Length: 280
Image (cartoon, rainbow, N blue to C red; front, side, top):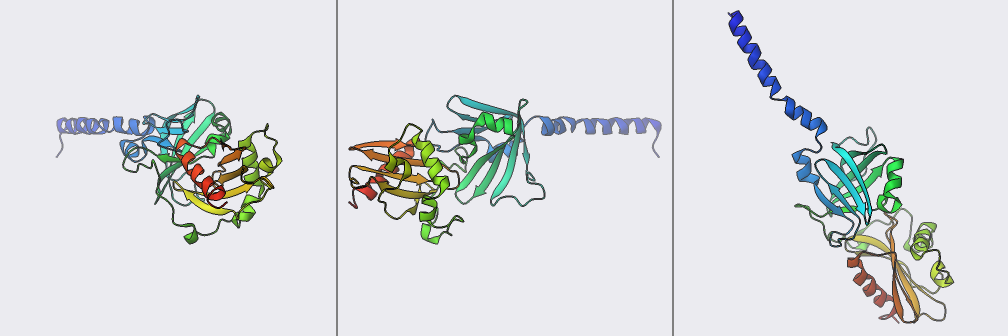
């Protein structure tokens, strides 16, 4: 039988026990990412972990940061969402969404993917925030640079012969398509008016798929009609992100196009030599 005195003691013990859970509940709802989430996703992510100047993301316990050069966008109060896509089928290899708010601009979300090559992030954002980030940051893929899943140089994909063809069709069709041409024109800049270079319409080997530092590119080599040895170029196009890089030779002078990462420049030089010096 419980006496009034015992009942009071039991009630007091129950209140103390309940109070012990209040800090944990408050932390989980308003104090940012949990220790488990930080262990899985925390740290630096980059388009090129070896290049300190490359566009970078940071996952911190209390904020998400996207930055490139002087541009820096910060999202507060991050939280995880495994059901970000609701009832829709999530993209292949989707792991989790890290969601945050950027002042009054709206949401900035890091969509985390996990696959054989490692962990990567793509950006999703409300329209005002996407405007702050800019299309160049929004379309990139960022690889994890910290922790056990470090991906400074993602392992190469299987050989192109073992891969399914892209949905757009053959390399030749993609090379002549509007998406690659638009990206190439933007990389050259509006001041460039050399016809053979702008339109990529001179003599050219067959376009082909190549894998460089874990990324699959379409390689298109072309040259100035009747002057291929001294005026030629190669273009590397990443169909997934829309990025394009190139190397142009005019009058015995080589110029990089599209601001390629520092680690990619030697690969462009190597591919250029294979196309225009070893074969010609």
